[in-house]
Image 1 (tube, rainbow, N blue to C red):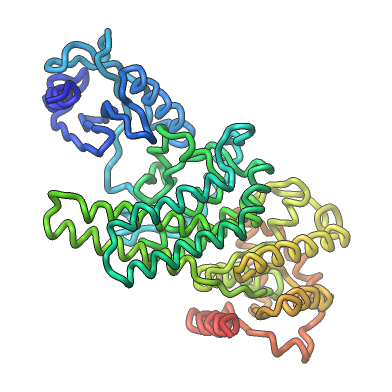
Image 2: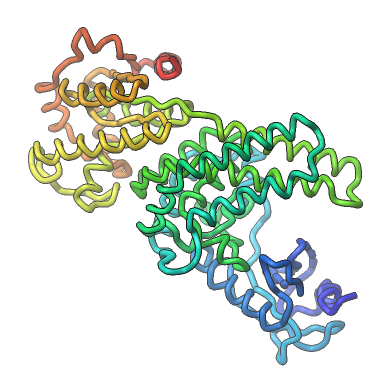
Length: 522
């Protein structure tokens, strides 16, 4: 046995701990051993040098433990409690004693049932959790340090590991259909990287490459006090965490789709883009999505070919490999761009209908209420205090807002996504400007007109105002102005219109959304 194996074996004894530890569990990966004892967990690094990580000396293991605590404290300070020395001898280790023969990261335990991958299996995830996570992640990225002069996150740094996946898979794959699929995905990867390379370089220069989490998937998210909390970030290889923020977003989007949570993947992406305004990131997102899926395909294929694996394990790993290969092909498939306008009075249910289109069509939404505030340096939930025709809501500010919405719709559509523009669109000239955008690009254009009776409109506005959790600042006075001054949809616009009655019950609402989806797919 190695010295570390002796230490781990000795720490199975509850008497070795300076705190109650009735039952001790040990979980090992290829690079660490995690010991669960009472209310705490102790993570020890294995003395390895694998090239992409080096834990070969006690000093390097201590530094890696310190990095793990420092980096994870950014998102999960209540879990990561510090680095503790382990003294004594390998057969009689003493936690907290010096001189140290080993070091461990000390963590506060949490129930495994609170991991989001476990919750996904039980069907317990919802959109509100991921919209909040998206805002938390946006704040984390905003606070993270930009790459600056560090040698990470360059366009060539993205291509090399992406192509390496195919090199490492080649000797493991025998079926011609798999070889053909890998060849097609490798060619796509090269071509997509070439298409996105200028955008990657521009994003790095603009500070979009930052010190991220590096391993953001459902298994590294835990529900703590109502929030999805990221933990277990990449501490051992800076090149894996200094990355484009959109690569980090792509990992979780890919993992949600893999867990058959497509609607939540779309809502998470939509909320992250709304929080950051980083719609330009859509230009590089497909490359990162496919890369993340191919990493998983490679790992599961390697596992399927490991010696000593029984038939059940080999069959399961092979099925996972093929599932990830299919996922990569799906993520690489062309998307269908479109421009969709939401239309209707305040309180008509436009945002609710737009969210449903995001979920079901994989669309990306831009909201006038959010972008209007962003143009004035305000957060999405800030109260502007502006008068009906003043400040953010002056005619000039409204014109700038619609210009911003048009620019974002063009960015989204040019990246290949359906763009859903959530605004009132009560004037014909506002609607015509977006119709021209769609015509110029040869893509579908639709107007989803949301309807509700006046009593419902008033009740919804009052309820929204009382709740205070929506970016809209519309009041009953705003509604009165809209009712008096709106320009109805003209006869020549009707060919683009799908009406959704948001007050007629779920069946009518779903029928309207279904009609809108069919319009987009033409």
